[in-house]
Amino acid sequence: MNESGIKNPQANLSSVGLGNIKTAYWNLSQTELIEKTIQLGQGVLTDTGALAIDTGEFTGRAPKDKFIVKDAKTANTVFWGEVNQPIEEKYFDQLYTKITAYLSGKDVFIKEATACANKNYKLGVRVISELPWAALFAGNMFIRPTADELKTFQHDWLVLHAPGFKADPKVDGTRQHNFAILNFSKKTIIIGGSGYTGEIKKGIFTVLNYELPQEKNVLSMHCSANIGKEKDTAVFFGLSGTGKTTLSADPNRGLIGDDEHGWADDGIFNFEGGCYAKCVDLTEEKEPQIFRAVQFGALLENINFYPGTRKVDYTNIKKTENTRVSYPIHLIDNAVEPSVGGIPKNIFFLTCDAFGVLPPISKLTPGQTMYWFLSGYTAKVAGTEAGITEPKTTFSTCFGAPFLPLNPNKYAEMLAERMKKHNANVWLVNTGWTGGSYGVGSRMKLSYTRAMITEALKGDLEKVKYETHPVFGLAFPTNCPTVPDEVLNPRNTWTDKNAYDDKANELAKQFVKNFEKFAAHASEETRNAAPKVAQSV
Ligand code: ATP
Ligand code: MN
Image 1: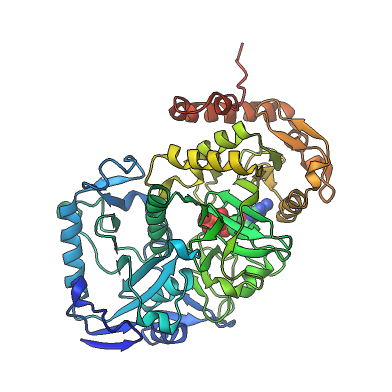
Image 2 (image 1 turned 30 degrees about the vertical axis):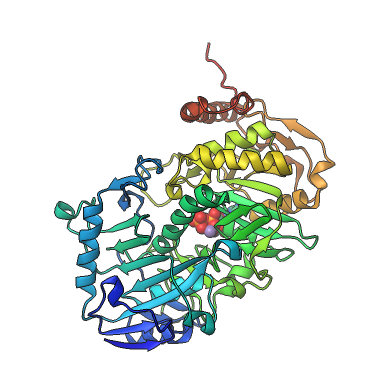
């Protein structure tokens, strides 16, 4: 085996079953990985110096093909179900062996980095991939050690990444040819059949969501975070597409992180060292910081160019609506270093309500906080799918069900404890529709959402009058200095008020039904925060 790059002299690939590699490229620099990708014909440079690649068959995560090995460690700790699907250890072992055979004689690219910006919780991650750009992704997204640190680096978790390897579902225990399998006992993730880089990042997030709450009393959160000049920390929970990355990039505040954080006794910390932003319709005017981060070192996925140029056409979503860019966090001008902040003063729950029913901003009581956290409501819009006009309601508990291996009550209890102790303001922000449901109304203007968040952070929404939503019981401001008053009450934005009331009731019913599974465990205060469904006469 040939080896090049920087590594711990004690580290070797034979110990992980990869003794027959052609060349092992250890911790190549960004530049070298970009060069390799281009040499292999796997990517091209854009006119701003970013690297553009295609991830292949998969352009998004494949939640149905994610499994956790069920063994003595996980049998009674993992919350098994549709999200956390069990797989037998023998299948993991078999696939691991098959992947090592598949990689033998090939080159591999190894990236070693850490997760968790708070040194008490550092997790060493080693990603071994057949693709140089996957190693670039890992270097962009995790926290980068110095060259000296690499010489003594030891990993806690291994990610073995072989997008070109396909499982045989008939004998390998998978659903189809692609898979991501977590083995908590062996601290190893194997990924095959999919080149979508998000699998690597969300694999490690799932690990932290298992280990930190149970073993370290740290609440792990699917949220972005930023910090003001007065050192006040804000976190933004939300499901995919609700605005975590977009809204945390705020020119007046330091960015802590855009997707995953832990809440420890002394404050919050980023799990990652990079951002993973959506690119659809990206413009410099609307999202200047993200737009400018698309430079040398950034990795663009599945984008298209204006014909005959290397200028990215962000409006072109022919390959996928989920075009993405990953970049090290320092490519955002005002990222803070290290990526940590104090106990949050403001917590935002972001929801993209495609019904257009929820107020653009409301302030939650403690009971509502728990109710909305456990519910984890957002809506997915069908968008490009022909014939589908109705939005699809999604309840994803704790705003992150696909990544949570433990019982959701564990995370909810940890949040409740912290809320009781620290008394943060909690805001519900609807970044979705106004003036009607999807198809009739329009998406809330990003500039309005930003303005409302800024007012909330400044404390100005403490001084205004509030109204209570008759169905959802949400207290929303009736005036906000930098936003037209009429957008604040969603009912006012609809021309057909009866249609609004019907939709609100319809959504309320879905909330109540979804909450049935949490009701037994929830406190009376939480249960009382449920919306009031009108009984039909
Ligand atoms: P993921 O978990 O998948 O990374 P995310 O929560 O980080 O998702 P963003 O990447 O911030 O989501 O995506 C929000 C998208 O919605 C962006 O493309 C943004 O431009 C767009 N958008 C439009 N209107 C708004 C609004 N009012 N508030 C927030 N985002 C908006
Ligand atoms: Mn994001």
